[in-house]
Image (cartoon, rainbow, N blue to C red):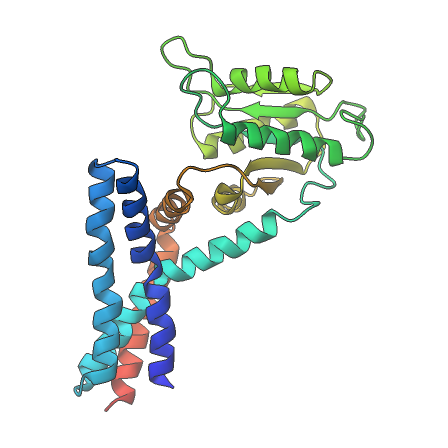
Length: 285
């Protein structure tokens, strides 16, 4: 039974090194031999050490302390994999149809527009935003309980060297796709957190009835939901599929950001690692 549990943990422990190595190989195949590629190439084998060492100690070590150490290493290695599975489950829930129903407005999160034009991923988000707006009761921009038109908030700043802010480029795209949509710009935000906070304040100031739907890329939806929960915002996250050149890289980045930000969760995980190591070591005596 102990070895079976160890095997499951070892499989979860392969998630992070598997993502790193796959990402590195994909970048190499596209001729990208930069620091990011080298980091992934180094990180993959390094993160393999813990699950392999843990499984070997759990299966072959004789000393109870080493058996306990093996169990602790397996739990430690499995932690990123557990987080990744949780993120994927949340992603699945947030991409189901009808996620925006009952909302008083729709927010679309921006993405970089280096040439001042909306790219494929951002265009997919905007199409998702218009679809979410269309799913609200009545026609696009139907009057809500306050008698105001339900707006489509386009959020994103970062205008540099004369380039427009993300929100400005997004507005141009929306005006061509659907001139009848009620568009409101939020062009100061430079992070996802600011996107959510500033857009929520903007809608509250306009008297729009919460909750509000916030549309983003499917791979980004789970982390957005964590930010919404952290700030207790009246937002319903809607994830939409988007075209991606390197999907593994996108999900890997989301995982690493969540792992970096989840400080209290790491404390709990660390306590679990120590507790498992001690308990397994005592049981092996």
